[in-house]
Length: 110
Image (cartoon, rainbow, N blue to C red; front, side):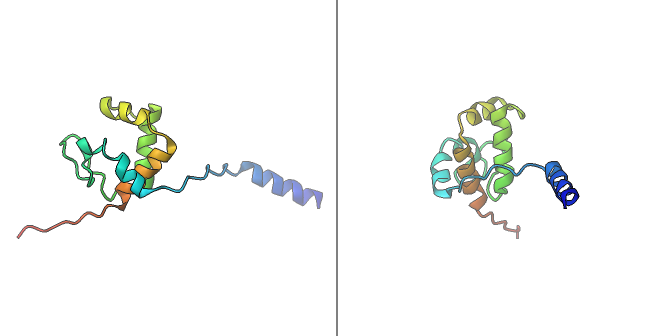
């Protein structure tokens, strides 16, 4: 029995740590916070600036990861690094919830 418990303990020790729980995101709060982002990315998530990507419909996880990378300095951009530096984890989650909730429609040319 002791050998079994030692094996289980060894197995559990090599498992990756569970990620910290993500706070429940608030898309409505994200819409309000997106006002600053809308200059380049548009409040509807469709970029107004040709150098900025569209964000509408992107996955929340992708947006969270990218904003976190800008905030930490892992990813660099003159404008985004400044904008992301002041964002909290909740701000990032809310913005990700907002932009990922936006639906994109594509119309085929006639």
